[in-house]
Image 1 (tube, helix red, strand yellow):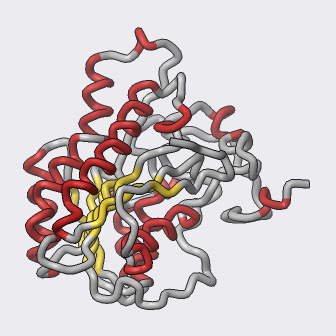
Image 2 (image 1 turned 30 degrees about the vertical axis):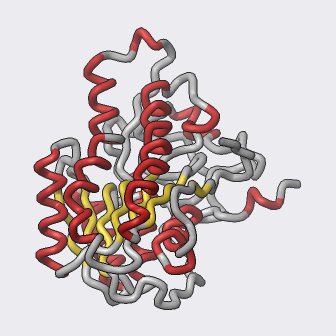
Length: 296
């Protein structure tokens, strides 16, 4: 028996039924079972006390987990979402329940002006910015490279890669003002092992690894650390919004742990990288992926 299968279940009495959503971004409120945002027994210890974080894709999934865990560690939160109003309001509620202030920002991060505005709204609200989390992404499976249209290719890069440049450009003047500032980017296991059905998505995630390493060297003299997290299969709205019902029902079962991970099993990586616990770490990638051994 693989004992790892029983850990990380949002509800151990429920299996994950076949399900799909016919839109992107996906909606967390419609998922069954609900992804786990934070463990009930997770105890904050002030690792991010009075810091301010801006998180893209913070309305659901990994982004929501990062927002709530950061809040439990003492940070105030701004997060960007596209149009998932119900999910965004739930994230706001969860952050405020931790006793911290939350600013949801509705914006299309594929546009440079929207990214600049999101940073400006964050600084206006909180007076500072300490942590930038570039997390939002989209993916569109295709069995054949010829099926990847110009429209899809541009959309995937416009969501997954370009905003990291736009947001970093806007955030840098503010990050430079405070010691211990950091940037954390979300890449993927697909950047390391590839994915034949997600060619454009995997390409963006490989670009993020290179961007993280290059930016870390660029900003090291400014005292800004730049790292990344490369999740494996994690139970988030992106999954039912991307794959068919059969694939969703088996999602994550091919990992050594035999299951998909939960968002909070990634969120703790972001807490670590944002905190002083990671003061000697930059240009690196953490791999919460269920036991797959990744090199590179």
